[in-house]
Length: 380
Image (cartoon, rainbow, N blue to C red; front, side):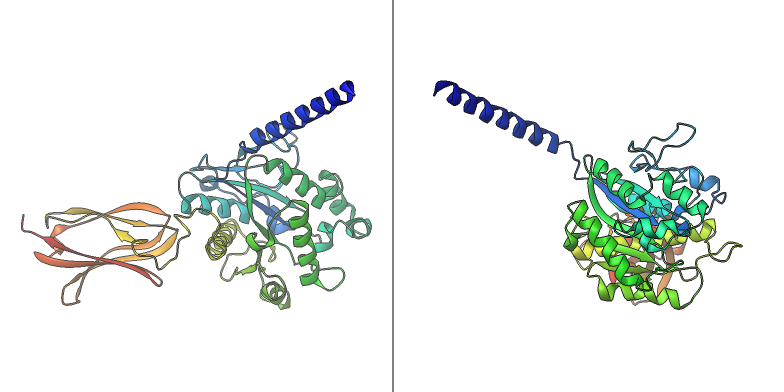
């Protein structure tokens, strides 16, 4: 009996050791590393050759990408995080919505939050390209160039997306999914239902919580019946949000966005994701507190001289704001700031000669949010 007892003790010891190692490994996942999955067809790939100098400068080290394929020149390796410089999909693609989606989130979230993107897209594909049960039948009937793109992902773009996403989950937490697909619709005619299948598969295969995983779909370059599919998604998917591309610039193809269009669309994806995350209560508690929370939008420093001054204000999220100065009677004296600002502290300068001596009311406004402060200026 002793050998058996000894074996049981050894087995128990090894089990405890394995559990200990898994616990240690779990701590390597950074809860402040927010990962987002992106997939779709050519507009999520990004039309090649459009990015400009501004798209390759000023990139925060907090924004990274994990390639789903190896770059031919060896600069990017599948499954290895690298700087999120365009292109984010494959070496032969271009600037895409994921670029300024990630950049805007980085600007809008607290400095301790990192953003990671995984982008798998196939030009011209129907949504069935991402259905594990249907992709082989679908793919077999497509043009050779489309099949060649799928082969870059090992034949199954969906399987590659899941494979790389699982690697990314060792480092961070998947917070949401964005998609730009639909120009090619669905081979079954049930696009909304097929999209729901893909989302449900991702949730299951990656162990996500469907109550905490927003899914964003963008509409297309031309107003047509297909856009109604996108805006119908929230009716069939609980956590789906439609992202407008209205007014976003289109390139000469008519079906792809220009660089300016991709920048604008990416920002719209980010703004929608921030709204979704706030609604679901996921992400940084400092950022996603109620918009009506007192002090969320603040005017932080006083002006104490009419000979010229600096004024700082803080906002908890990227927003379009106005900052005006009024007399106590309500007459506007000056507009000190107007425009879109990222989250954080900002400083504006204004000339003291425009400010009367005495009490002045400063009002910061952004949609339904506002902050006010009364200051007293004095003669120089």
